[in-house]
Length: 173
Image (cartoon, rainbow, N blue to C red):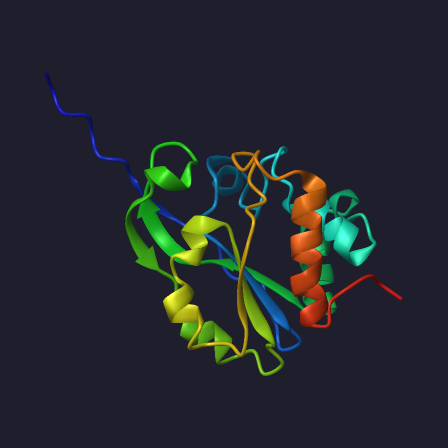
């Protein structure tokens, strides 16, 4: 039986963060849909944008993608992934192989108002030992992925709200 070809090396997306970032939200690595679109959390069933819309009290999904990113930066939320590159067939975190880390310390050094780092799901949280040295507080959040069906939207929202409030992020005034 012939061996299957190795998965191609995939490269992630650039960070979205600025000097006003108070919370850095780290995923694992963009899904196939996100890589194809060149956009974070592009899979239509991922609850990332609906969660943020509820937390900030503004429908981010209604904004064009570049405007969403500008709004996140204005509101103090940064997003990135723990992996810069990896081999993976499909979109499941369990399929990630030969992951290369992002330069998290370099990014954090450019975020003077950072109050914490939150990991979006288990694969991202594998980097807790690294991120605990980079921020005053670090959390593991339930994944916004559609693969995390054991948590309801409301339960995820409550967990995420607690972290956002601890970092001074919340609804627009």
